[in-house]
Image (tube, rainbow, N blue to C red; front, side, top):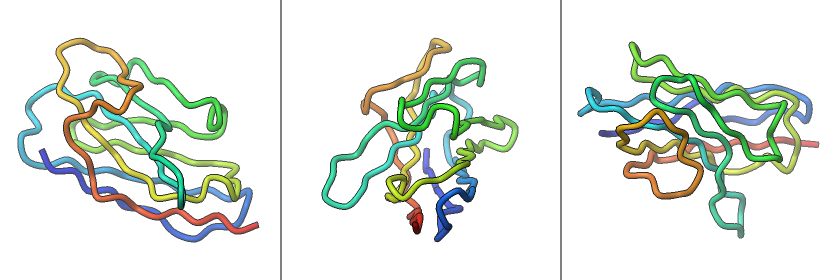
Length: 124
């Protein structure tokens, strides 16, 4: 499966952005989906994950209450709504997919497929 993330940009602190990740190719399998970010000079970190049905999700502590992950399986797309953005949210954001046969969230980085990343810059 191929993943394409888009929706990043420059926003002021306190603002909002919605990232999208469109999947193409072999989309008839069940995938848990996740969002990660990588700030300059830092390792890639888990941000949010969602189960294949969308019924379960999990967030990093740093984004709880501000970010919401969702998915539309009919459109093969997963979203990350980011509100109350902070300068420390500045990073390249990646979406990822993992083939899975249970309806669980994957919170580690052991995903099978990765998108190319979309850059988010939050100015103070």
